[in-house]
Image (cartoon, rainbow, N blue to C red; front, side, top):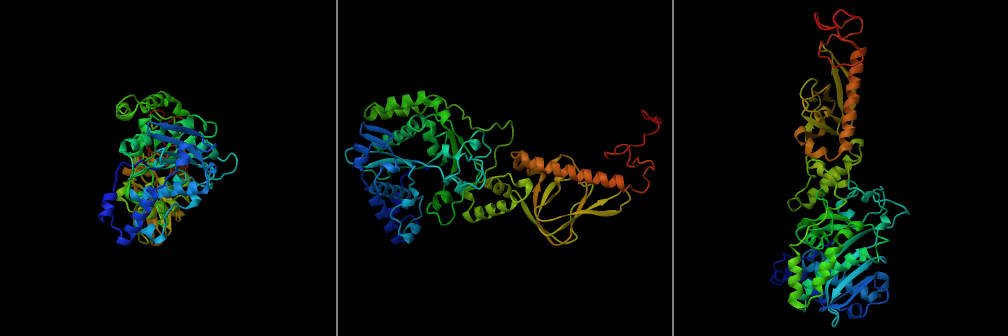
Length: 523
């Protein structure tokens, strides 16, 4: 969901403050001028029969919600020109890229037949003041669920990563066909009319989307998703008291070929989601907003302003129950360059190839990689030493390691090996635990180290990862125990009992009782 941006930066552009070459600035200014000059009087004054929602003219602002199939090709082209113009004006599109590609409009291919365009503007002139689109879902097999792997992604998932919504309740199990993405929510940055009408138009578009979900589209849409800037667009959702959840743990990366690259490079953008069923809790608020819009001029704007401080938003059904767990990991977006984001996503994709981490989303794996320290280990160097405090988990990135077990007499035996993607140091999951084996580099190696101090923040949100690591720990302990039972150290008690002492935690054999201890001398 693109935010309704309140900042206006075209003054800087005209003063040459964009950083783009003069020819790119001149081209962008022409595109902005032509796009802002777009007029669609027919859509606003007398929308076609296919309109899903319409306000004929409420104190100077008309609204229409129309599927692409109800628009002519020229009307679609006009909306796409307006969209690009506003994105250029607020800096979400790179001027040099637009100039190099000679972009005067967004590509016609981005307007799908099932999209619903919400347009607010001046009915007499056809000037567009605010715009948003409810996008049709990607093609998917009948019954395909949001959590399904290898399906076509929503645009928000293409930027923030596959599996983005899988940790939320309910949403992952909804059919893809019943989810819509909200996008291109922009206001006219250079209106010919007064700013009061633009402010009304922004609220009218929000109301229109609300009414669409609660009315004409309620049987075909279960959830709405998208992304936004919390300090801008989230305020619009909050104003209507729409319960939603915002996901902060992502690594947005649109790829260098995207014309929206600057939006994610220069701004902090988070995905959101809301259930259509939750919208019912905000119906009283909607009525109050529409009552304020029914008042003319400044009186209506003052009524809207007063509503900002009234009432409370109901919690979203999609909010995951954290039960005191640490907050979700975050990446400081504006401090993390796109090259670094690309590297983290690539490393995360490598990590997800291996079973303990396969359940992580693209973003979760990338965020985990922000806490991993890469170490070079020379052949013969020990990663872990049996009996020492387990203070870190190690993931083999390159090379091979040997796993050795020492008996009570100092003899060492190789009991296994580690290849890329495998781990050692699992015992660090347990506070106060010691390494049960020694792991030594058999070749020169590169490993990724996760310090025990980071386990809580990095692993606790992902219980299935902890489960895999715990099972691996138990398997290793069972292997150690099996080795002890079948290869007893010199001095072990002949009848199968071990000589480790009373504190031995080995399983599968008895222990000699100390003289005078309860049960000593008994069978």
